[in-house]
Length: 171
Image (cartoon, rainbow, N blue to C red):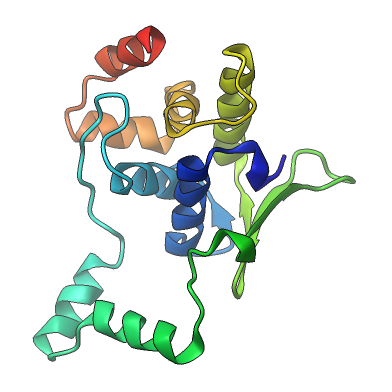
């Protein structure tokens, strides 16, 4: 399992989730958040709040624009955190259930639900005869396990998960 197994838009979604993840593990919540930030996917046009939104608002009251700080830091270092060439996705050869995403100053291990999401998305792509998984496949992977946090988040936002599932199956 590598980033090359995912189409460019899905790859960007995984990287965006890695950038936004807090802590050493990556689960379904950052994946869902990154998926919704990439624009509508299979009829899902939902805006979720980023975990750092309260901090961003607090800094804004002090006159600090977080986006401007990021822009200046990128210009100063010529480094884009979302550059796919800086990120690696790999399955451990010794521990096959361990999948890690590593990038600039980060190494994240997918938790069980996150790993299942990736595996189901790759299975979905292969089942449809595609070499790479798409954003729709990632959504399929998120919806495959009704007990994960992402599905619970969708329920809280009053998303009709059954209708979304039907839309995905039809596509």
